[in-house]
Amino acid sequence: MRPYVMWPDKRLRSVAAPVAQVTDETRALWEEMTLCMDAMPGVGLAAVQLGVMQRLAVVDASEARGQAVWMANPEILHSSAQMRSHEEGSPNLPGVWAKIERPRAVTVRFLNAQGKAEERDFVGLWATSVQHQIDHLNGKMFFDHLSKVKRDMLIKKALKKAV
Image (cartoon, rainbow, N blue to C red; front, side, top):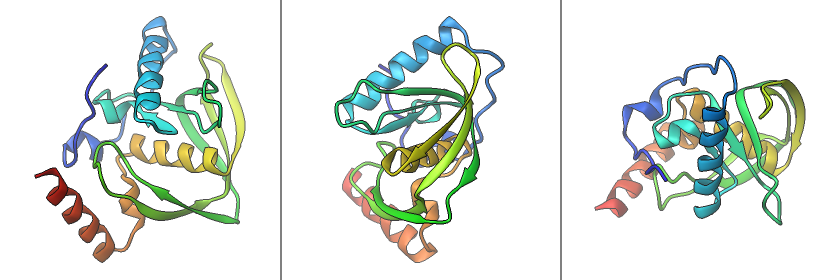
């Protein structure tokens, strides 16, 4: 499996390129991403986190696992007004977490494993993870949702742990 790109690698601040079509290579990458996500263990992973600059994400917030949703070019069509807080972290900046507030539910359009456009509603942890992965694809990290003071403290703490 590919190693995680570590903060402050500039790829984590870059917008990933759209996927023109879903191919066998795309599906193989999704398989690898799913293995990486499960090994973390985590509930989602964006290709950017592994240094692949394509708009690909996997999400699996199921209790039993094995329910991964593979997405190419995911985009949020609708977000609920009701918010939800969750402790978020990233293998790209290990050892630190922050409570982030995001919409509780989202409707997302993406290309599925067959290359067909699909719209799906995600709620709760699923919604949080999808939004987190889309942020990665747009060059954003979870701590970008914090105030500058909290963000700077979090990054400082993470870098201190890495030494």
